[in-house]
Each structure stands twice: as C-alpha cells, then as structure tokens.
Image 1: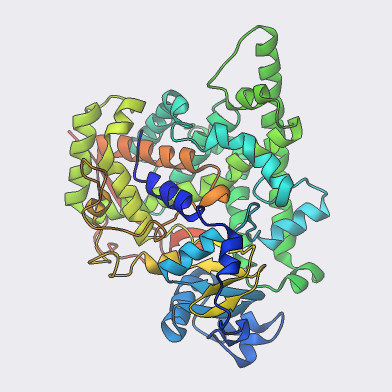
Image 2 (image 1 turned 135 degrees about the vertical axis):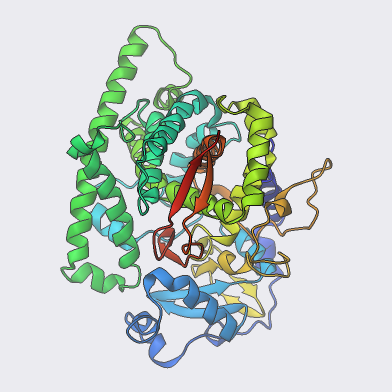
Length: 510
C-alpha cells in the first residue's frame, strides 16, 4: 500500500545525499556563538534549577501545558531559541532549519530518554531496550527489527486477528461500556489488546466483558498509565535532584514498572514455550511475530523479550490518545465524518472486515488521521535529537552534542504551510493521480512518528490499529459530542490528551 508517508522517506533520502562532513566544511565561518542565541536570561539560566522558574508557581505553565510555553518562547524570541531545561535545549521552528537538524543526527542518532526510567533500569540492573540504547549497540539491535516492523506492509499480516479485536471494541460500545468520561479508558484497553496479539501472539482479554473480575489485568492497565504519568511529571526535575532525593514519584514508578515487567515476562515466557512446541511439531507460522524474530537468529532471547515488552507498554498509551483525537475531530466535523463513512461503505460495505486490499484503497481515512496529528500533535513539540556535528542555524553555531527539539507542533499550525490552519481539512493531505498534493506541504512539517533510523519502531502497528478502530466505529456508529462539550483544551502527559474528558455520543447506524 503506497501512502503519503513515503514523502518523508523521499525527504530523508534527499537529505542524506549530503554528508555531515560537507555540512561542517561549508559552515559559515562567521556564525555567531552558541551563547548569543536568543532566549530567557537571568534566573532561567541558573544551572540545575533554572527550568523550574519557567513553570508554576512562577508562570502560568505546567508540565502538561509545556507546548504553550514553547510556543510563547518562539513568539517572543524568534525561530531559534536557547533555553535551559535541565540541559541546554535549542527550539527550532523553521522548516529549513529542521531539515538541517535531520541531516545532522549522525549514523547512530541519540535522543532523550525519560530520566526516571534511566534511574529505574540502573537501580534494578534492567537491560536497556532498543528505545534506550545508543551507538553501535543500538544499531545492532535495531537493524534486524526494521525488516519485521518498519516496512509498509509489516502490520498487514495481523489484520485478521486485529479485526476481531476491533469487533470487540464495537461490541463494548454497543453494550454501553463507554460512559461519558470513559472513552479514553476503553480505547486504551483496545490498544493493549490489539498490540498483545502481535507482541505475545495471543489475546490477553483486555476487552473481555469480565475484565473487572481480573485484578491482574486491571493492574497492568493502571501501571502502564502510571508510568507515563510519572515520566511526564518528572521531566522538569533536574537530573541531579531526581537521582539524589527520595522522590515519591520514583517509588511509585519503580513499583508500577516492576509489576508490569513481571507480568510481561510471564506473558513472553508462555509465548516462547508455545513457539518452541510449534517448532518441535514442524509448524512455521509467518504470522507469529516472535517466531519470525527467532528465525532471524539476530537477537538473543532476552532481547526478543525486551522488544515484546516495549511493543506492549510503549505504544498503547499513544495509540489510545491519538485514536481519541481523530474521533473528536470527526465528531466536530460531521461532513468529514460522513465522507469517511462513504469511503468505508464503498470499499468494504457496512459489516465486512478491513483487508489489506481495502486498506490500500482507503485514502481519506489516512488523511483524517494525518490531519488530526497536525491539529493535536501527538507529542508536545516534535522530534528531539542530540546532533552529531556542529551546525549553523539562523546564523548561530550549534555545537555537536547539543539537544535540539523541532517545534513541529507549532509549525503544523503555521498558515504559511497550512491555509486556514485551525480547520480540520483532511483534503489537504490527499494526492492526485500523479502523487502530488493540491497544496504543497513541507515533508519536515508534520513528523508524528519521528524521522530517520530512530523513528517510532511501532509506527506501522499504531497506524493500523487506529485505521481499524476508525473503520469499525464509523461502520457502526455516527459519532457526536455531547452538547456543551464541543471545545477541548490540549494537555500532554508525554502524549496528547485533553484537560477534561471528551464526551462522545455513539448513535448506532440503521
């Protein structure tokens, strides 16, 4: 299936026609020094604690509204801002500068890891997963996974069983399991169940009508959400203080992480035992993700277990929250929802499952998802990297090793690239017969899954899970918003959410 995301791949190939050596050689020798980059001064630059003065009680911003803080800094200081957020961070909001950053991440890209998770791994001597590794170790680990996870069709073989999961989501909605404030919770259970059939090759029962009677499963759900909540809450605590002091957040994080790791280890052990039995019986199952990794003979058993755990824990929260936001914009724009409904009916009818062939024909559903990513950006800024070489942005020299955050969340609403930027217009992402969009969009402007070798490893699975849920929900329901709850305020707990729950109304289609 060829989709608009191939534009990012083309951009990436074009960017890497130019080596980082060329960038250094051609660097403007008259570039101004790093310390001259505009940004907050005075108290805000005090080592370790300066970032605390950017947030409440000293300003109106919280960690959950940090995106508004970053936007305000760019509005005040310009397209390049230097700010101390524990370490020096450069905020980049010019698309040309973003492309320079993308060229400068090096062969082994480095990105920030939530420090509370680093401390947890150190305390309990837990091996780092692929998302936390760096250098050659990361490359050795990641390379064999790309063949199984990053190709366009990587997730398609799991469509039949994931269709069943999406059917169960619809059944839960019909049973009234979505209360006024409970949509996100049900979407989260859907995401957990949908990824479990890949990570562990089995249904774990998160959409079971009797899950309330299974405290272990309920604890899994709570622990994953707690981990992301605490990652977010500790982002602005200086590393030296987070490590040295006995924060309550560390204790809660360690407890939640240890429980979910223990349960995930049990799931994986059972999966591995099943695989070995099937191999002994001469069964080769290409739709078994773990078996396919085992047959590659590139990863150790422990590394495969880490992959399963990261798939299970990392993608669920983001998938659920992004699914909620797409549905919100479709509910706010009935004409767009109806257009998507027509595409679904014309492609697969009112009850049929979603197939690979059908998915390849459904262009509007992808446009709706992309437009939702633009309006409610999945993360509070954009991709972050520690650049591998010195670069020059806006006439200022940025030293190698500096943390650079791309402000895609702000660029995605720039009317220069997106006319009528506050409107939900999926049509802006559609392409004509030649593959061109009606209005050109810079490929670096919206990068919800990151870019390059270090982009989100679970991207294909997340997109497919959202596509499936949207297809099934629109097939069966007209989605509306409760009167008086049409407007939302975005908030971030690592991933996008809202200040108050979104109150959906699901009306069964006749």
